[in-house]
Image (cartoon, rainbow, N blue to C red; front, side, top):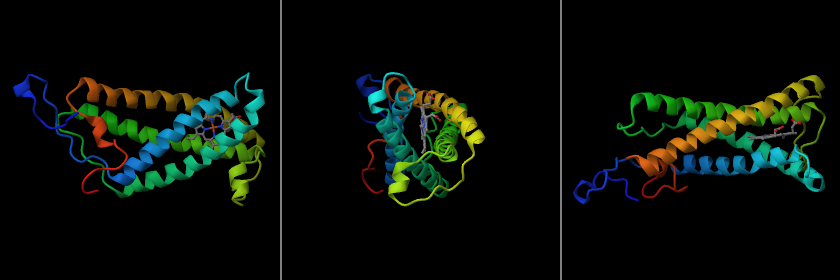
Length: 198
Ligand code: HEM
């Protein structure tokens, strides 16, 4: 699908130019985090639901392992995002929508970080192991705090809903513009390696 301006001569609606989009490191961060979240959310839901007794332990170990990888990745990603300028959205996207997009992106960073940190603190604070960190020889960074561990457990489950809802809005906007609008927004982030000079 071309994202160049044109198409009037063929009778097709014209498409806006979106520029080179995000850099390769930003794209790799984006799709790695997206894939891990896509795995860890259903694993988190399954391990806390009935009917998974045979694999519950494996699910917990996997969820906690992917979760701490996400904690590190999301932290690095936020620093990278702060250090590097974001490519401008096409001027054809109304200013109100651009502001909403910036808000949604910031919210995603915050929710992901709160998810990962609350999961870590809930686990370590409750006196439970994180097998991946144990295998790497990383000691718990905080002591046991059972009351806070319980509160953070509630926060972790609540923020999961907010995260899923925000991701759904984020995906819906990109799909709407890319498939039904004039702007191939997806090409700003896909494929994971930017073609040409990166
Ligand atoms: C962005 C990262 C993360 C996401 C998206 C995520 C997502 C989820 C979800 C959807 C649930 C089920 C909530 C429910 O319905 O009760 C859950 C539960 C849980 N998660 Fe995570 N999680 C993340 C990071 C972590 C980390 C880093 C750890 C620990 C190392 C962790 C440990 C747990 C534990 C122990 C539970 C069971 C519920 C509880 O007792 O607190 N999570 N997570």
